[in-house]
Length: 90
Image 1 (tube, rainbow, N blue to C red):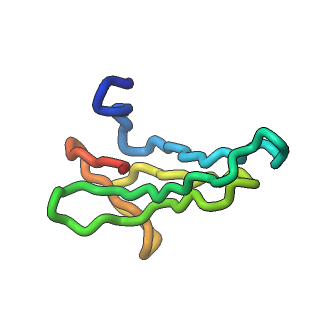
Image 2 (image 1 turned 90 degrees about the vertical axis):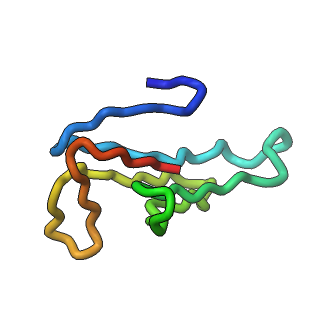
Image 3 (image 1 turned 135 degrees about the vertical axis):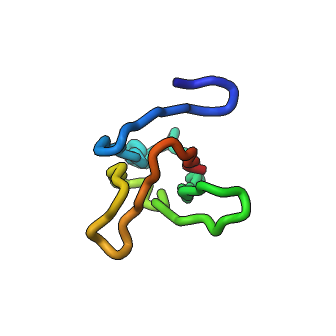
């Protein structure tokens, strides 16, 4: 859901979320001279260290990152989410 604070989602353990950095249209006379680049971070605590999820820095191709909401990850670098905790993607 969206409001003045941004989008709010309530995923359940086992859900997946796709984050997509869309490609821009081909360059032409009306294309912007510069592109905006974004870095998305996963944050749980204000004083905690941010966890870089995705860098949107390839304007000519789509980039997709899928988050699986799981309490335990079999992957050493995987993300783990605890039930009833708040997480923020900034």
